[in-house]
Length: 230
Image 1 (cartoon, rainbow, N blue to C red):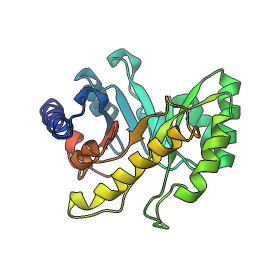
Image 2: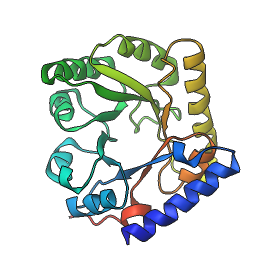
Image 3: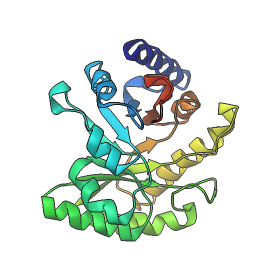
Image 4: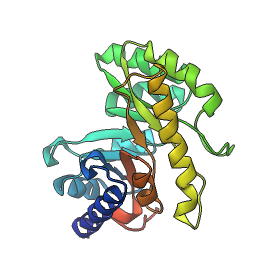
């Protein structure tokens, strides 16, 4: 099932990229493995997925795929609490959800202790929904500038989660705003020119996200099937 689902996802990403004149190879799938088994993640890796995402540190420790199944990066795609920064640095290659300075400092210290260069993305809450994590757009510049000064962290780009809509096209303005924000920050010298990643779009709206410039799409249900919770 995973192979067939992945083939379909790749076809949809190809079509979405071509509609806007993009190179489809600039878009990568982050397999959102929340509540999935290690076996499922390893099957996805064997089928060519190179990025595995988890929402929770404890679950990620338990279900991390074996390196024997193929090369992959492990991404934190859920909210990270400062007190779990050390463990997160030990197991993840990239934290996509950095949204406060105290956590940035904790990640930097932990990365230094293990001799690691940690990739991070700044999660921006563009909708202003209080139940969602992420820093506001107005506060993001200061966090980005301070994060860029840290020695053991590499800022890769930006991440966002728009509100849920029945019509995926309704999420388009949020994706477009994040892309414009990235371009403006790079042009102003606030972010390095290499910090081009845009993590946005999930199962219900990833095609719109690709059309608006996503480089990482976080796909769970469309890849693994409906989650089965214990």
